Amino acid sequence: MAKPTTIKIKLVSTADTGFYYVAKKNARTMTEKL
Image 1 (cartoon, rainbow, N blue to C red):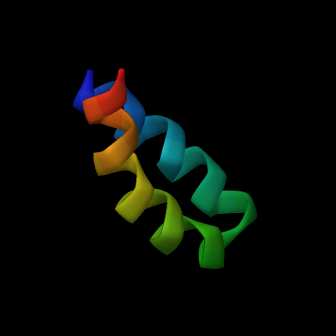
Image 2 (image 1 turned 180 degrees about the vertical axis):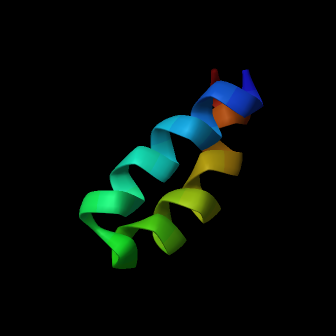
Image 3 (image 1 turned 135 degrees about the vertical axis):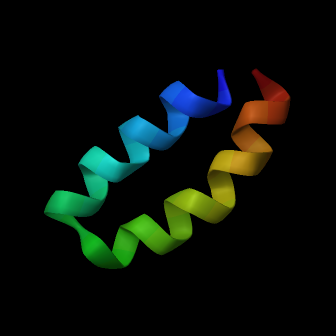
């Protein structure tokens, strides 16, 4: 589950590089909730 989430964040990073950093940090919290 962690791997697919990282891919989704990477896709967003392409459109919003700035968001990539925030998404990566939030991804850890979201993964735990999932």
